[in-house]
Length: 109
Length: 124
Image 1 (cartoon, chains in turn yellow, cyan):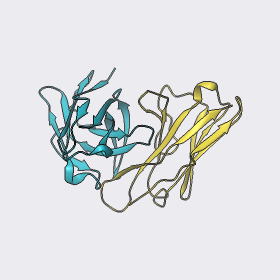
Image 2 (cartoon, rainbow over the protein chains, first blue to last red):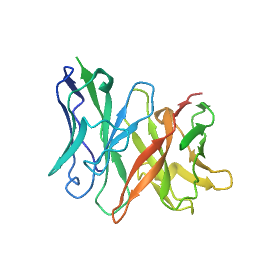
Image 3 (cartoon, rainbow over the protein chains, first blue to last red):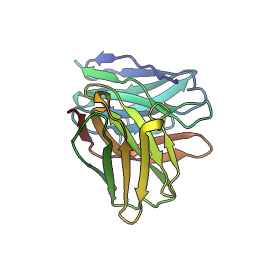
Image 4 (cartoon, chains in turn purple, green):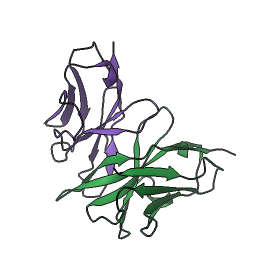
């Protein structure tokens, strides 16, 4: 079955840049999407189609793609950005199958 | 503002069927622009896609759950529902409903509006 791989944790100091990666064999052919989830809350879409930011998401959030890896970058990290981040994409095998990465816990030191 | 609200029993016995309903407000479930979906999250773990549905009744399911899942729609009530049969403790999770955006010309979708989620515990 198709898998997306994320680092379990990333830690940065306030004001620094956080980069969260997501790897998957189909990512050169499929877009990636990113969700932020704070404790006890539903996920929130923070990036779509690799690098498009939904309305209301701060400009410090950006996305990029290179080969089999996509990256969510948070510039000038703030304490409020501490959360779990999940990437999501689709299997490229021809069948409709949506997959989430295992999630990355972003800690703001 | 679109809102989604999950409802249903918080406790289900093993081997029985889990049933949840998602009520959509602030928008029509019959919109041709969107699908509607279910996602779950076991306590302390990651997200798992369960399945999506179009208002016409077309459905897509996670292959790993397909044999046990049914998603249906009631357009008159602006609701869609999830049934998961033969549940075990492994099905204990927070279940979310969400609106699904389909990317044209690609077998891709993503979730732009989510309900708050409802915890379903499988236990005797």
